[in-house]
Length: 383
Ligand code: DP6
Image 1 (cartoon, rainbow, N blue to C red):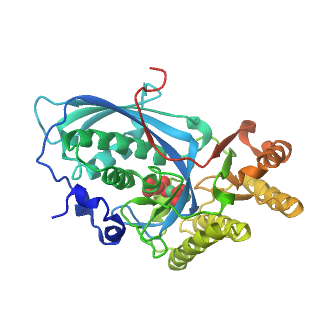
Image 2: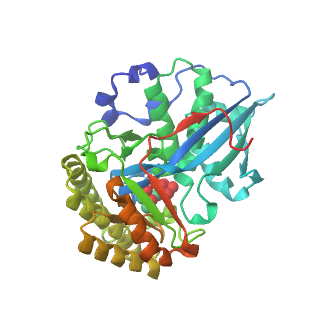
Image 3: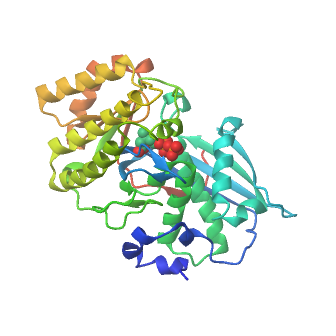
């Protein structure tokens, strides 16, 4: 029978064949002592997009993302052991220290899915305090960083029950649990590039959790920058979860899933060889294909705004006239992520100030770059 310790040293052979069973607890059911844990987890931006899923939270195709550095969620979980055990989990969520019920349905569904893997969830009450380093109104999705930070906190509590758990297992299970909350969250545990989904070009890859890609990337990609142009603040009109659902019976779904698999292999080759033209071509095609899927869903919808298209056109013109290797990507919204090597940062920032800031809502943009992943903290901000 597999144990958590078996994971060490065997991960490269096991990931492809691993099943959910691997993450079931291997210790006798126990109630942890009351405790507080704090984790910070970053946001991520997909280069090859996850769009379409199978039950339960398994990707229809493999995806890969850059882990960010500045945009992150910090979450503190305080566990209060219950005097009398019942079979129901209970939690409160404070966002920026204000009780927030809008997160409850997604959290409720996460706790229900995670219960089997963390039996202690029903043996106490959880007080969850969470804050983002990016403004809630910025239109940047916090579900990836938020679910990753929460999963890491729960893993720290589980580790108090099983102190011999290896670090590899801890991180893989945190990613596995984060995925149950939001698919892309499984790519927010480690840095600086993470693949999720079983793929022949990524030897230790799995549909169950994200794995860091440790290729010897060409130096162009070591300090890559991501400047997020805020075209539309606030909530997006169609959730990603609803968008994934529309890939069922989508007329182009099969071709799209195959394209993503090819793009992932080609992207790894381009990044290893330092082929920026190929990198740019794949990343922009992935972004536009994602939105093309939305526009050809039934019902169809459009998340890009006129300003999104103006920015894309301006980026293409700037790249053509300057030969500066900047490209864009999009998540499931109107905001534009500009990706470029650090060596051209000052030219790109001048371009943003002179030409692009006019398209940003309230002139807002956020400068970010590749990051190394989540970290455990001792103190919650401002406490
Ligand atoms: C466009 O992970 O937000 O950002 O699994 O339903 O929570 P759920 O969806 P989510 O989808 C992210 C979609 C995307 C592409 C990506 O991050 O790969």
